[in-house]
Amino acid sequence: MVAGSRLQATREKSAWQHLDSAQLVVMGAAAALVVAALAWLAANGGVDDLEPAIIFGVLIALGELFRMNMPGGREVAPISRAGALAYGMLLSVGGEPVVHSPFQVVAVTACGMAAGTLPHVAVNRSPKIDAMARRLVAAAVVAILFRPLTDVLFTGEPLTHREWLTALGLMTAISAAAALADMTVAALIRSEAVRARFGIAFVDEFRASALLCAASSATGMLIAVATSVMGLAALLLFTAPILTTQFAFRRYAAVRTTYLQTVRALSRVTEVGGYVEAEHSLRVSKLSVAMGRELGMAEAELLELEYAALMHDIGQLSLPDPIPGGATVLAAPEDQRRIADLGAGVIEQTGVLDMVARIVRAQCDPYRDPAGVRPGPPLASRIIKAANAYDDLMGDSRDRDRAAAVLDRLRADSAFQYDPAVVEALARVLDRRVLR
Image (cartoon, rainbow, N blue to C red; front, top):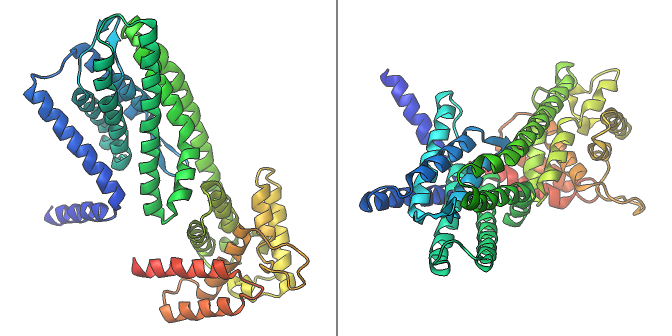
């Protein structure tokens, strides 16, 4: 039992050590907000407007229960987010004004998130604490900005038409500001975690999250406004559309995950057949994606690069005899071209991976045509060419002197064969691996 306890403690310590500074900052901010909110409630006699607090807390808990993972490993809970934003922007319930403070919004949101997370923890599905912390901080930002302003601007009930327009404008501006801040923090965390440039990470985060943030923010505003007129029954009416959208997103994410798993399984055919070394395609894929991030490729381009790197050797199945060790870098140029063309032909049969097929077909082309006639291959092809050559010559060896010799060989061929910028990106990636 003692040994088991020590092992568990070691795992927990290791998990905390792998957190980046941006993650620690946002989690610390969320923890400070929760402590301050609970202290404020204890000092001010507990919860105001108990029934709305319970109903919105339940809605937030359900949102956390049905959270999902989107492409790129992003954890989202749009119903939870919409409920928290709505509670932070709530003006009245069925015409009766509410008086809860921003600290109460933080406390109710935190309790709802904790309640919705417990079932996941019970079945060993650990949540992403930094994603939960970001959702809590976003709700806190909305409440802290919106509620004091409404206390000053709207002194009477019911609100006039002009006051409602002002309230809607405030809701829109503050929700947009909170969403932008959340995407910025997410981009900071992602850029630090995957060693990508912040600008590229922010664009990827915006493309992946902007529409979902807009939908959840709009739903939160609708719930807040409708609850003022219809009462708490409005929660059911306006939560249904985003719930339907969430299940559609869940199916899309599941299909995309299955697609990648299928590609990975297909890439192992060459290993099972003895055409390449074990784990060669996976090593080339990981190295290529790391190099692509180093060179500033966007997330959609990185996905295509990953697919192409996993299947870059599938054309070897057409060879009557395997290349010794599967090292295409040692094969004759005509064999390299044949492997690339046949591999691209196989990929084209899918009907949906045309760009991946182009990348695979151009993987053996020199990055610069000696005659200056043909344009250079795509960046992804140049990356795979260098990553494949490195792994063909290194295999699974960890010898640093051998790695340096391989890099020197690639640099020596950088006049036409290997893009010098790609080779230097490879060197930086390898240096980081040594440091880690």
